Image 1 (tube, rainbow, N blue to C red):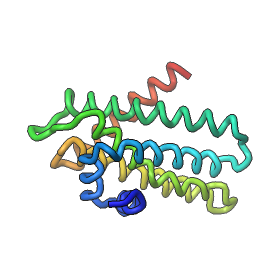
Image 2 (image 1 turned 60 degrees about the vertical axis):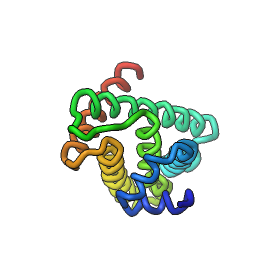
Image 3 (image 1 turned 90 degrees about the horizontal axis):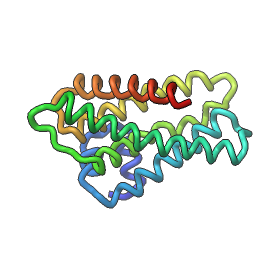
Length: 166
């Protein structure tokens, strides 16, 4: 499957695409590419003329956040809330979570005056759905609800860490 087919499959929330990404160790660099492109798109959409330094800072923050998010998901999903069939590693989580940033590519359109808020809301829920699906597939969960709980708990912890270190 090509990079474009993977991104399209993630945008369509196709579980089998997440499964393929999870198992392909060479897809980690592609996941990194998705995170960078999504960060740039969101940065441009949030303030079309924010400048190159702010865009670089936003991208670096997104990369750090990606790794932190995968690590939190690993700990929560495998140590605190595993299912009997849960098997994963950091590489798998980095790949699927990185690709789950794909809906953020559409955050570029948030600069549109009348539609900006709607774009942000749609992208946020789409990103949430992609992340829950990514976590469910990577942790080999049967329960989407459990995957949602892992994502929610991870988000709360992530926000607390961000607040403490901001």
